[in-house]
Amino acid sequence: MDELTYEREYAARGFFAVAGVDEVGRGPLAGPVVCAAVILSLDEARRIPGIDDSKKLSAKKRAELAARIRENARAWAIEEVGAQVIDEINILQATRLCMKRAVEKLSPPADMVLTDGNMTLDIALPQRSIVKGDALVASIGAASILAKVHRDALMCEYAKLYPAYAFERNAGYGTAAHIAAIREVGICPIHRRTFVTKFWDERQKN
Image: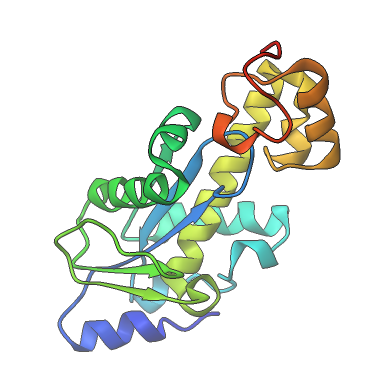
């Protein structure tokens, strides 16, 4: 996905700072949801070939692209919303909050926002949701890459604090080994309590 089709379409309508927004980590049992917002340059000299849905890329390729995005994008921002807030307001609202914060953190600011999937944000800017946007829209794909690289690195750091769960391998997702660890040793502070009720309850050690 090399072409900035959507971004150029909106530039033709007078929107010259289109931000793509995406999240990583809605499904895991542990760790934050991470969102990124990216405004890509329409300048050919700053074009970044190879951007795609982060899930379709190898870890090495994601890291390479993330570095290029941080270097060449007009603006980018990353936000996290942790397990406690996810438990308090639910994962959908936590994701919306995370995306909103990422957009608001952009400097220079966006004048139009494109989100992946079917997500409406509590922002004053014009916005549009695009199903499979991370594979169709370069700026959303770029956001998915930044969010994925950031969250994977974060979970590797958490793995050092909580080695029982092998977060460096599962990134907090509910693998068989991760669930077995929860049943054996309980949960840790970054687990989403509302996500683990099938494997753990308050009577168990934590």
